Length: 304
Image (cartoon, rainbow, N blue to C red; front, side, top):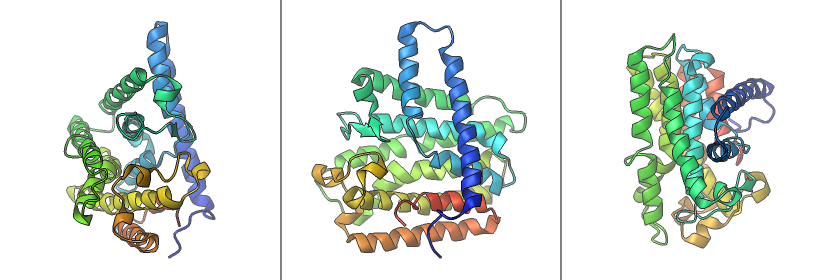
């Protein structure tokens, strides 16, 4: 199987349509939030919008939408969940870039939030994006039961908390210059990266009111895909093109960050990422949903 989507017109047609819908909804919501607000509050909202609209590929919300399709739902009913995961992802990037954490001055090819605004505003923008994500996710929807919305809220909150994404980021800080064993590296990646990819898929099945078995399967798909995504990120940080990545390269080594390349060479890491993404696609193949398989492949296509 060739891990390359560049010639797949059907994928790009669907992706472009969905990204346009996601971006349009985000733009509408920020316009509504800014209406009749005082200038200082508008500045915070502008900082939030700046990072949300700075060129992300919308990989995680695409996973949510495709998982909904795979489990009998619709993109329309899953849109709020998709927006929520994108806002959570953006908040995590704003905070990751702060001087106290990764101290990155460029994100998605433009100045990071704390550079474009200031550090205090960046912190508040990240905080506000997190709360806005749950505001949107908790909105009543005609085709989604209150019980499923509550499950979605709980699932997302758990995934990004101290035993999920934030916990993984804490391990990322703790492991700087320590070169932890592969088992500890994997635990860190499960938190800081794989959790949000897993929950993006799980939310799509939850809002579709899918069976428990589907939710478990989406979890497993996201686990393999999330690990593959981080391995690709580690490889590209070592040897990627900063212009294509929209951020600096070589930063992991310069800061002593834990990396898959502490344990194997790039060729071996490449093979592991390919094996993991193929595992996720095999699990996803039971749904006969090309959008889901395309979305999974898009996580690693920048390397393959």
